[in-house]
Image (cartoon, rainbow, N blue to C red; front, side, top):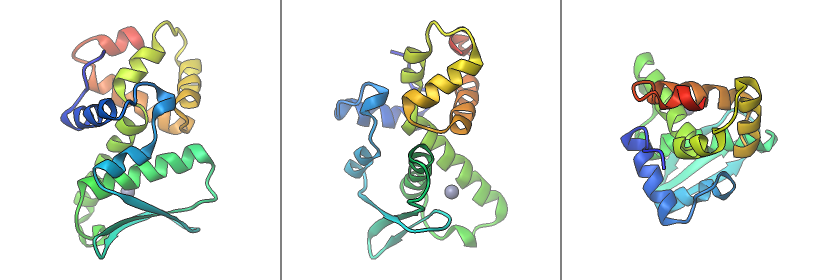
Length: 165
Ligand SMILES: [Zn+2]
């Protein structure tokens, strides 16, 4: 199995192993309830997450198509697990960093590197690979495009990425 790309992905890997998540179809974001239970509340509008009286809440637009909803929920879980406080009080650069971290969390949670490596082997064409991976992992095409960019960056030094995607 491909080694996790970062300490964050390594923690996700341990959690997934502990709960028998070995294939893309096994991935359920509910597994993060074992770390910190999150109540997802569907309501129209932009997504936001907060801790209210000790309860982690993620407000998500339930009208979004499932792949987009999964990406948004994963991003909000990332904020809840990694960040504290009220983001609107942060300076702009700190806010951007939190957004980057939440996106990275969503990338690793919804499409772990070792699963990408397993699924991507043997594919020649990057265009069809992105579509096929988005479908396999149940995420949007745009999300998978940036996920593959992160994958290439994470494994650039090793040369693994260029052999796979
Ligand atoms: Zn965010």
